[in-house]
Image (cartoon, rainbow, N blue to C red; front, top):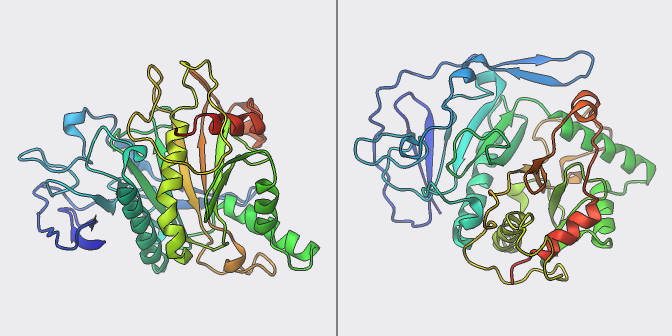
Length: 377
C-alpha cells in the first residue's frame, strides 16, 4: 500500500491509498472553494447522560446529485470533484459537511472505489484488503488527535438508510467521547468480570454463539453469527476468533482472511430477499466456501440497504468502568439491514424510538438459516 497525503482547495486533508507503490499523485484541486466553516457543537443530556452533536451547517450538504455530478467520482476534464485525480483505488478525505469538527472530533469520507455504480460487495479481495488497511491507518492517525477518544469506521448503503450520495463510500467518525453504545458494553464487561472473578464477557458470548444454531459462516480466523437477541430483522456480528481491542491489533492472518469473509457476507445480504427461489435456497453448513463473481443482488429487488460498522475500544481513559482495560474489549463488526421482507422496511416506531426497546419480526434463528441458504455456490 502507498499512502499520499494532499490538501483540497479549501484546506481539507485528502489521502490516496494505492495498491501500486509506483503510483504518483500530484493532481491539484482546481475548484474555487472558500475555506470550510463548521458550527459543530456537542451538547450533553443531563438525564440520559449521552451527547448530541448539533451541526446546522449540514443542512446545505449535497443531496442526491445525478451520476454525472457525483462529488465522489474522480475529476475528469472540466468536471471537478472532491477527488482531484482522474482515477483512484481508495481515497479518504475530511468531510465537507462534518457532524464533528475541531474540538468536537473529526469526520472523514472513505471512497471504496472510483467506480460509481459498484458496491463494496463488487470489490476484489485485493481491493477490500486495501480498504481494511485504510481503515486501520485512519484509526491509528485519528487516535493520536487530542480531541479524539473513539474511532468508528462505518458504511451506510442505500437511500432507505438515508444515504444522499450513491457512490460506494463509507465514513469515519472520530468522537471526542466514548459513545453511549460502547459505554453500555464496557459496563456489562465490568459487571461480568466482577461477577465471574475476572472472566471476559466477549469471550463468553463468542463461545456461546459458536455453539448455537445461528452461525452464518466461519473461517479459520473469523466467525459470523446472528446474535441471540438481534435487534434488526437481519443482523450479523463478525468477530476475529482471537480477541483484539481494535483494527491495529489484527495479525496478518486475520487481515488476509477478512476480505474473503466480509465480501461473502455482503453478497449474501444482497440475496436475502431473492423471490426467484421462493425465499429458500440450498442449505449449507455455514463454512466459508468459494465466492461467486458478479451478480451480487437479486434480479427485480433493489440492493439490500444496510449499515456496517466497526466497534473498537475507546482510546481514552476507562476509569468509569471498574477493572476494565482496552484489552478486555473485543473488536467486531456489526452488519444489519432495516428491510424485514421484500418491499417492506423495519421502522423505529414508538417502542424503539421512544423507549429503546426493539421488537424484531424475524426470529434470529430463521435469519441465520436464510443467510446460510443464500451462500455462494
